[in-house]
Image: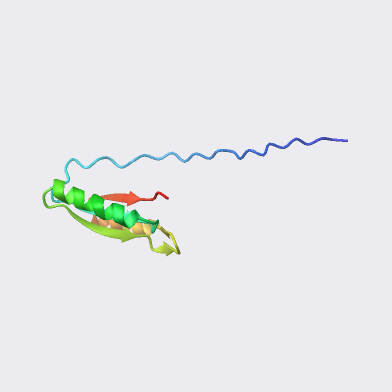
Length: 96
């Protein structure tokens, strides 16, 4: 008779990435605000946009959402490419 011992703990998968470099200045820049449809994220992003506009002269913002999904919208590579072509930087909300 053979006894097979199994480990019920899942292996941890790590994906390492890095943040984009900070912009040297925000005055006059167009900043994207990405919302994934999580509750309250749009309100947080609108407030972040208001605070940025109050602090940096000429800064403008635009709210973006991902193009796929139901109750959550996911950012595709095409979405990211479109936003990066229109904006100098982006603020996103993804929390629950």
